[in-house]
Structure formats: C-alpha cells, structure tokens
Image 1 (cartoon, rainbow, N blue to C red):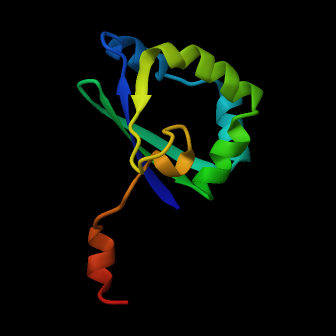
Image 2: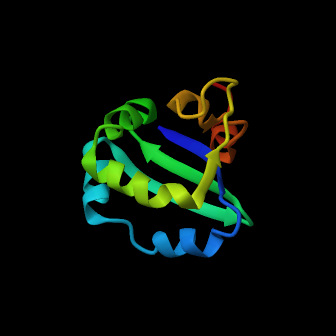
Length: 115
C-alpha cells in the first residue's frame, strides 16, 4: 500500500530538519524494514512536508513502531523540528488513519480503464 502524509516543520527549523534527514539512523532503517515499510520519500515546500510511504500496512507499522526503541530515539530527536502532522479525518492526529491523505486520482488507474 502507498500512503501520503502532510506535516509541518516548526518555524525556523527547515535547515535542521533537512540536515537531520541526510541519513537517518541505521537501526531505524532496520526497524522500518521489520515492520514492512519499504520506501519513505519526503518533499518539502517551505515549512510543509509531503511524505509518500510504501508499506505493507501503515496503521500496523505505526502501532508497532510506537514501542520500538530505535523509533522512540528518533522521535525524541526529530520531534523539536516538527510542528505537527495534519489531521485529515477529524480525530486525534497521532492515530495513523487520521494522518493519511485521501487518494484522489492516479494516471495508471485511469490508463488501465474501468474496473
């Protein structure tokens, strides 16, 4: 599955956020692989970040990562750089389902024709 997320960098932290992502910790990369996250790409426009995550099950990966020591260390480190994740479903923003942007359209699906 692919999911898209939208987060916002804390004011004045754009450079630090990018610097922190030159290379994330290897133990976090290993944790991502273990929970079924195959790719994670982040784009930035000003303070806005747009994430595309290719994974087996995003909600399950986020649930497992909550107790993962590598992820806990990363969140403690990266947290001051991030203002928030946008809440897309009217609930608590840290719930995985409320972080995911709804998919509207894809060229490949349209090219494949009606289903």
